[in-house]
Length: 146
Image (cartoon, rainbow, N blue to C red; front, side, top):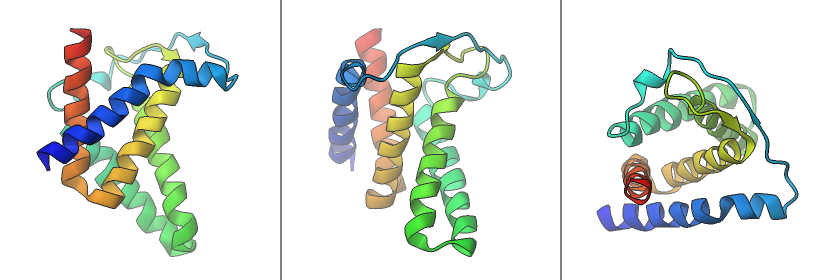
């Protein structure tokens, strides 16, 4: 699991390194707006983000939305809708609270993509791999930046 998690973390890290160029090549406008909310960012710390975010966004949100959508829609429709909802919520959560970042299109789009990535890992490989990949990615980013 450790090696597999590292491989997936490196894959997302490679996407992150080239994400802005890919988005600009696609002609998607990159802009920013100022939006800070001091309440929620205290919940997410650097050390616990991988576990906390996977529990919140994959187990609770994705799983819960899937459950309720499946009551009304076929699975083939419910799962993709739940995936997108969880990915967008995951991206938005990084821009709230005192430590939330300014909403910049490129960052929001990358985090939504990362949310899709982690949800696909969660569905395909399970919770442990999703947590391991997320935590390893956070460490890679922390080491590369720090």
